[in-house]
Image 1: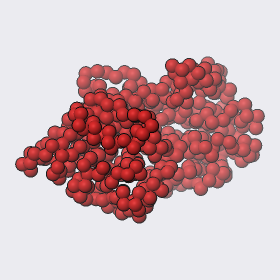
Image 2: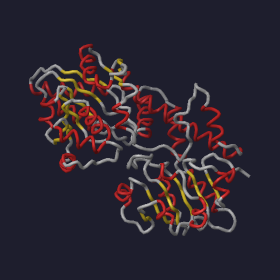
Image 3: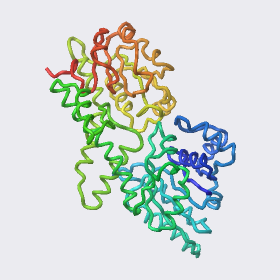
Image 4: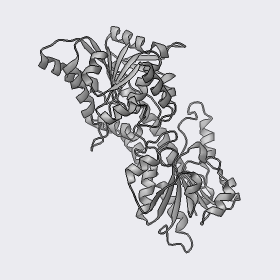
Length: 450
């Protein structure tokens, strides 16, 4: 099938590449000419494992192309995806300006029956707005062109997006027309060879499904962080608690890891947007508001542990200290620092007069873009380089290469011999046996309330 996709971010680029990989003829549209030219040359604007070779292979084979020419792409596509950003507005709602701009563009150029697919994460009712925007443009042209608007929310995990797209758990389709559903089944048939992954429903239910899924996962994370904070105060170990509740099949093991808070482009934005949608319809989403409140507080918890350590004895605080920070991206296998916990931590350390030596396998260039040149920040090219001259180590992102450090070396390298483990990667007994003070999230021992 001929497919056009508006947007070459995480969703659009991954979706377009994977559709091309299974044989569809895909054109991706972006307004950024430099980005489009870079993609044609094999320059990938995001880090996503496995994506670069797939883009290069499918572009070379002629199944995947990139353009700034919206009219050309719309003329090409019998199915047109909208996969542009929906950033949070000041009130927490999803900003639909880019989605509706694309809808109006589609309305100005379609000349034949077209299926328009909302792939962007959008609030309930957006399909109606997209339909109205396209219809208004057609009316202004004095044309009647049949078209349908489908909700097809994405469920791609950054860091594993290619695998998620090629082997989806489910493909949610919200449509009001049986023929349109059949066309979407044809589009996704290559992903359904083993068994049918299609979950078909009405449009509004599909729109809500995406928000509900992310809100559920965010709720689990905030709940575990809440329990971890209680564990610190009562002298319990949250890892024991996690194993105790995870073994209950009704709860399961997924998303019950406490840590320094969630970030990224999805969870914070989507929880806020869903709560705002509820408010617009006269419902106070108290649980959703609490989930986001707990998460924002949790992002500052690592600094609270640092303060707790340095306020003991004669030390006056963190001023003048140098902290090695391992991990800047909001999660492993991505360079994405949107709403990352590291940004909160670094801001707090700098405000307190500390210096930072940071290392991330992929996000250093993004950190440089965000923070610029600073006297109190050095972006290092390795984890070991970040330790040089540091007083303490703070682990913020759970990259695999951080999982098994040489604790004896940490003891001799870190001036203050202390590790703040924001992802509970290490066993307190092992760390403390090496002569290091250990602070985890809800792990007791060094943190037990006195």
